[in-house]
Amino acid sequence: MRLIKGMAALLLAASLPVAAEEIGTVSTVFKWVGPNDKIVVEAFDDPRVEGVTCYLSRAKTGGVKGGLGLAEDRAEASIACRQVGPIRFDGELKDGEEVFKERTSLVFKTMQVVRFFDRKRNTLVYLVYSDRVIEGSPQNAVTAIPILPWPTKP
Image 1: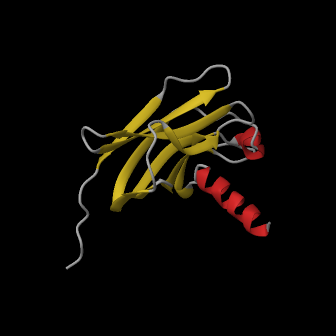
Image 2: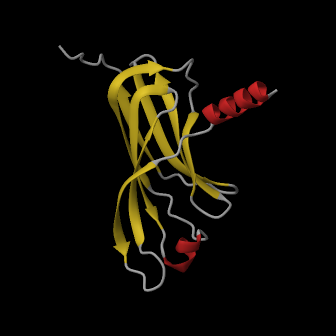
């Protein structure tokens, strides 16, 4: 029974989007009370494609509401994904598969990254966008990685 529960937890964890690692931040607006407004640069590895790391920059609202996690962050984001090693797929890739998701307001708004595979050009395409339960935002950013052979060390 423990084995079944353990495997179920492992499968659930494998299907969830990954968490990002904070690379750095810069302050954009000074706040007298609470943290400053800032731009955060984060990195995450694609959980289904070994050898790909994505870098995401986005705004985080500060102040009292931001410090308590009650503020709504802006929808703008920038993304750059790069090949950082030999690319290997973990199973069949689904177009539009979510690879990263983070809440950007208390309840209704999220920022997410989805992946597409352009088979004709042998290229991975990543799209970042923000959505809201009632109304999304057309603001988005895209990056593409041509799948190239990775040089081996002599």
